[in-house]
Length: 146
Image (cartoon, rainbow, N blue to C red; front, side, top):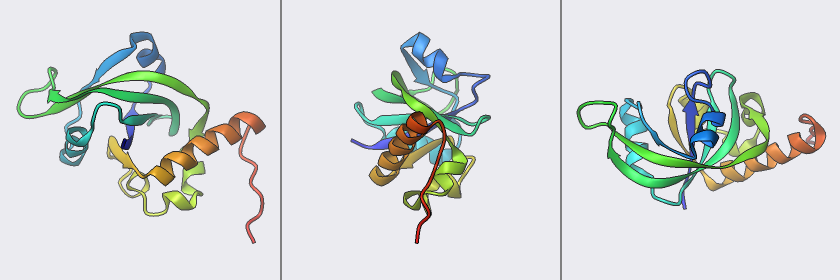
């Protein structure tokens, strides 16, 4: 299984829209690198849904259909179908990810405008842990690192 991060503007298509729809085609992606990432996705892969405008991760989705021609675009653009799995226990802000060693050098931080981003397993685990910490404590409270 591979891990991904899918960015969306919450005013255009929010996590709550995916929950209401259940499954949706992830369309409208034109960037060549993001297209390459869409083509690499396999059914069963997991993805974090990330609200760009709010700069925070909000939910977990699953790829349920691999790349096929994007019905909203011409040419060779593709999309995948994703379904809502569950919300994160708490939204994870981008600033929290920037502090995590697992995200050092991450595509997410290096290419901030890329809408479909691969995540390493360590990034996936750290993001999930941060969501749990935020949910339990109401915010990030880090111990000093000596």
